[in-house]
Amino acid sequence: MDMEINADARELRMAKRKRYFAFVFLGAAEGCDPDKEKKIVETPTGGCITVPVHDYEQAVEVCKKLAEKDLFAIELCGGFGHLGTARIVEAVEGKVPIGVVRFDIHPLLAGKSGDSAF
Image (cartoon, rainbow, N blue to C red; front, side, top):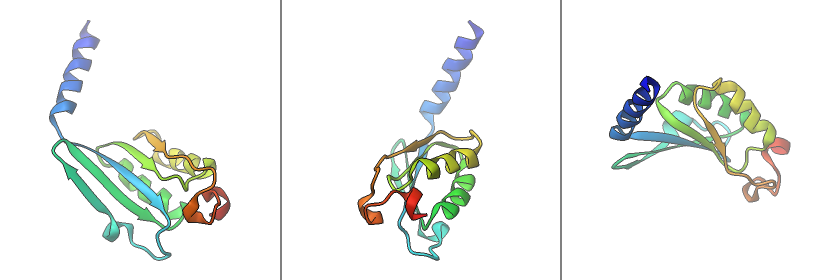
């Protein structure tokens, strides 16, 4: 019973505050600065932080930083293949759920998966 009360209280607190998720996408130019180029879309209940990255290495660093924020999820674009997604999951160490849009071949990566492009 106590666990149910604690879970209900936690859900109520979460429902009352703004909640954000991040969308990390591949395809930015080499040398891009994700901190400067990120955009935040605000809604009455939270929003989306959209962050461009050039490659998997930069995505790992960005996602490590994002995992330290109070986000309810990080969503990866379809350019992340299975290997790229696994690198991100490993990098965030379970601190935030990782979702991924899936393209086996991505139209913006010349018909390749990020796994073969990066």
